Length: 115
Ligand SMILES: [Zn+2]
Image (cartoon, rainbow, N blue to C red; front, side):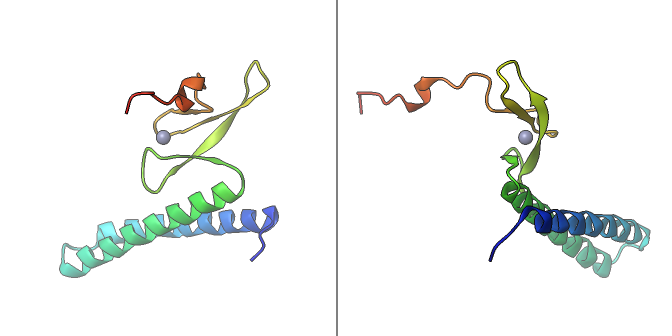
């Protein structure tokens, strides 16, 4: 299956709409009296929310966004513009982690000669 950016943007707005609906469903749930049904409703809302967040992260990834793995489903890192080296910076709005990492040193590929 082939994706182009415009169809992914369509997915994104569909997901946004779904999230709005989820918010409304949650408010409705809060107005229910405590019961087994409310508990079950609450559980399926949580599962649906997770699925949406995951689908959103997948769509974001396909659009070239960086994902932050500080939570699951992952957070989508948003562009912060360019730094002094004209490199684009991304930041997680949840944990404030930035991408690319501040120092990308060669040490990451360093292998210890000792087992
Ligand atoms: Zn994060």
